[in-house]
Length: 585
Image 1 (tube, rainbow, N blue to C red):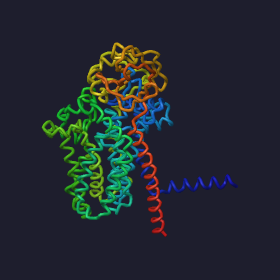
Image 2: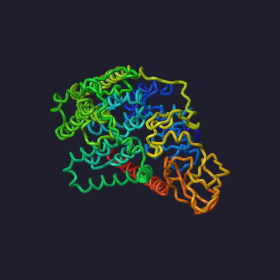
Image 3: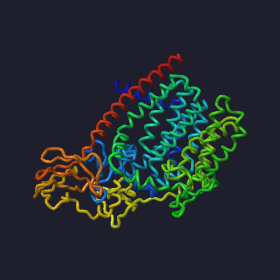
Image 4: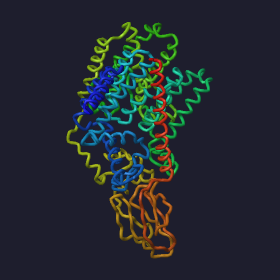
């Protein structure tokens, strides 16, 4: 009897799932996502940034194995001197890939699974946003299909493998769903703004800055509604949650930035690549459905919105009168921003004369992130108005056309089935290191201290033992455990202080004790950890990475905030569900 009851419960649950109002739309989006992900199932994707992202994930794994609470330092990178990706590059994708490793046999497969899931979930969240705006599930479905099949996004995956940017597409619809809820729905699900913004901030900084720009325009566009104190309070409420939750990353980042000069904030910020990507408007609007090594590595990848969205956007003048009057202003705003971003991505925008503040963008074609998002909604709305409605047959035809349009891009994916990720557990070696040289472990070493970056050859020539920088000092009995904790004895043959340089790149968070007493940590002339012993004293030294007090406090703040925010979201959802049930009754 008990077994029969359990079977009935399972049957009821499955029946509810099958009968859910959105399940068929989810199914179509998942099917499209799987089709777009087929090359990912074959192995390691050879892309511009592929090695950097697998190196980031492996560095996080190495740090966790060394019991770092906040996994910051991969001790075997840079000739075994250590390197930090997670101190400077938002780490969410690393953590997600490590979690997904549960379902795969390698971290490469886990990364590919993450990319595939990001396609599907970005489509689902886009569906919900457009459905909320248009009150039409079919328009929502079409916008989702257009959003996940934009050629620029496919190139992002199969040419660039720009993981942070790829995953950021998931969170963009959530941000605007939250904003739309605040300004158009009395803030019923305003917490989506926090979820989306946190996802962006912990995934990709450049995309975050671009979306902040669009959000600012959206808020200014609704400036008249800011007379409502409740809306201002809701925006500030979300801003507070966002700051608290992301403090675990941005707190240590700001602390490190203020501690010393790092390459990413100095040498790399002085570079201006904005004028390098010379792309014609024709290529952006229509696209090149092929790749070659020459095209790809000169940034002339298929940075295209594509002819489908282009043609449907051009229908705007013919459907404008059919748009609901109270939504025409926001409709035109979206069209204008989308078209501007396309123009600004082309060679006709004089980026070389722009102020240095725009250097963060790196490549102008990143503005197509915004254009892809906004014009996918506009294109879906326009087609629905042109055809006087949508049905499953029309949507199926569009889905087939969109998929067929990007098949050449999928077929152009370069795959390495023999890639060995275990090499990242070994000590990094570099036969010809110089500032700006490429490394499979550390990309171009942009997250080194500037001193270390400019002395890169010295780092790779250096022995992996602590050294006294003064003749009176002798270092003996050096031991390093599996957690990369150093213990050794310092013999002072004179009466003065000793400067001891460690075989560790200088990052905040290293703790040094001399006979149990803490010593201040300094940066040496070549960017390594250094400390000063007391006058004329010999003693036993321990050096380990523990993280800073700021990083530990920020982690606690983030964890508590995530817990409290989750409780708030669950409570809000329960209220919404109760209200719906009461309306139904």
